Length: 629
Ligand SMILES: C[S@@+](CC[C@H](N)C(=O)[O-])C[C@H]1O[C@@H](n2cnc3c(N)ncnc32)[C@H](O)[C@@H]1O
Image 1 (spheres, helix red, strand yellow):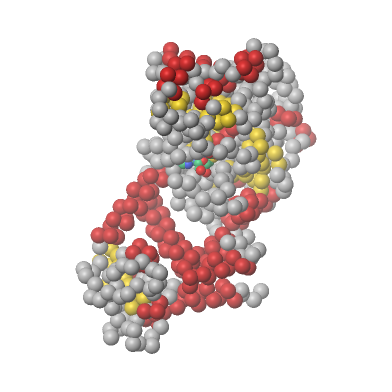
Image 2 (cartoon, helix red, strand yellow; image 1 turned 180 degrees about the horizontal axis):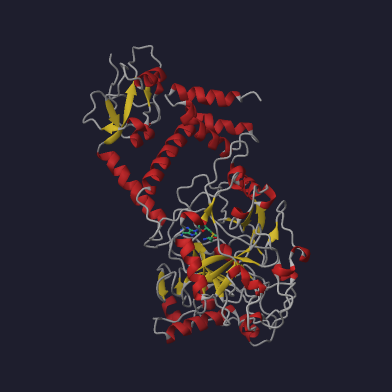
């Protein structure tokens, strides 16, 4: 295939500015992918405009990231929980609950409003609360709680603060309208917060975002009243999007892979059954339905300290293939995970069997709330949860990684994409995975409550564990969240996405982490980057070259020549790269950017200052005549 002339033009333009082909290639490739120029040739203009300004910026960003990555890797210890940079992993399955006929006593809780009161009361009795606030007197709520009518269907109701604030609070509301004030029960993410706001603000409140599809209601509240309600479809079980190859059939479950001879509760049998083999001949669950301590500890240590032997490297990584079909990069590694295997349809036990926890679905009282730290919506528990409790599953659409990549490319820039989960916990046991077998979960458009669970670096209170239920093949499994410590009512629940904040190739751009953890990997990275910038400012700046104005030399020639040992062209001055970039390229005067590897000490004062290019920053930078004129 003949090379695209625009690619050649881009390389030529960059070469003229002194950037070599090899340095530009990965950056250009990335931009081509990001702007999808193959599908839309017009997008080339975005790369080409302002004399390839985007490409130049991307080039420096790329360099900076590489340097930051290099610096951040060296001192990181893998034993303090801060060094995890594994890719997202995870898991699970299709509609096990749709496929199972669950005949259990449905434990619909009281209305959301009652839950809140209960939570507040429990806080009061714990002496943690200073003020008890939220209470309802809406007719609907009371009739529902008295069984006089159907439970209110969720809707995007905007309930005014006066409707739900208790009498104790109304005194406060009499304060001047302009005054905003907040009455709190503990810190924002860990305590109940009730807020009386300016009259203009409304409290967003939904009594059940699951619309009755879960065994418990999941309420949503925005105490700040400013945020738009999230737009997505609630689904209680995973759905296959299109090309994902998820093959569920009883015939695929071997007799040895199930416990057809069991009856009742496998956990009460004298010996563990075949389904416990996966977990070393012991069930992962206690008879109280919690994760066993040893199993939890083993899973936690694998996540926190992923030693080398816990990673596998694909011969041809489907993740890399989805990013670049023609020139995939080498596999970055996948963490091998511990699985739980639950009894299922071919097993002789009943639905109450203690080895069927995740498939019985969500039972915790959870609430979606708007966080204050800049994380957007989050999830908190409305009841105390003992260590090892199953909280919920990460439910979404099952996509191939190719489909995910395409989806993220198509999304509009201001669309929020929830963090997807790659189902790669067992990729190591496979040969070369086909695209339709390399799956992930995306809960952006269709998902359950887990789509609101925020990330916390290293010391989150939930752990995600892969669970095999209805299919023995491990392309597809469930990803279940369990508490890894006791979680008190009204605490936010979080999990460590395993996000690598330096991975700029990930289909979803990493967010600025506001997890607040002392082990925050993003914060650590920023601190390191800032230290580096300061160092730059102090002295280690970049060399700036200028071809003599009188000379006919092209800037590229100057730059190329300056790399030769005997070159007459040596950088005489250095400038701060950030300053240079804000000022733009002044090619009319022959100014060119320097290459980072030529860093050196900053010179004191400029000899000469030049007029800045029209429209650029009017700085008299260290614009020094570097030529030998
Ligand atoms: C799975 S969603 C969680 C729900 C999300 N907060 C929302 O409002 O829909 C993941 C997204 O939440 C935000 N997020 C999660 N954890 C965060 C954190 N620690 N700091 C900042 N933003 C976070 C990021 O925008 C991320 O892409």
